[in-house]
Length: 102
Image 1 (cartoon, rainbow, N blue to C red):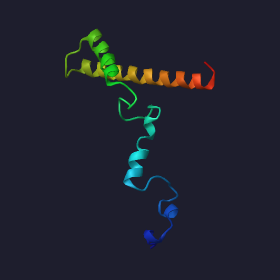
Image 2: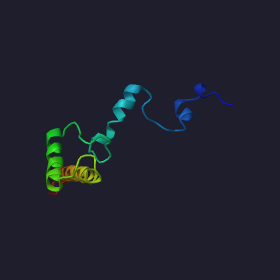
Image 3: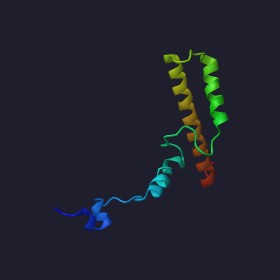
Image 4: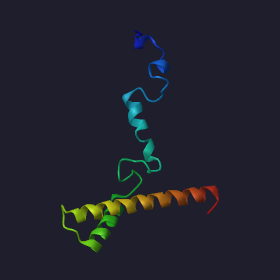
């Protein structure tokens, strides 16, 4: 049996690369935040919590779901979907403008 501590790093990790320190892991965990499409957090650092609350309030005002109800869950999910759609549109518009295609 091979002692994994004596192997070169790329062989010890089966060829995988990536951060090996806690600091590197913390930094790479923010990679999905760049464009937000795969982010696990709802509000990205450059986004406004107040803007999100306005989106949610708009949906709640239109459908008036009771708190802790299935209807509220649907409204919350729909508001989140709209939030992600807006983010994707902003990213697309930014990309198109940066390439001169807009």
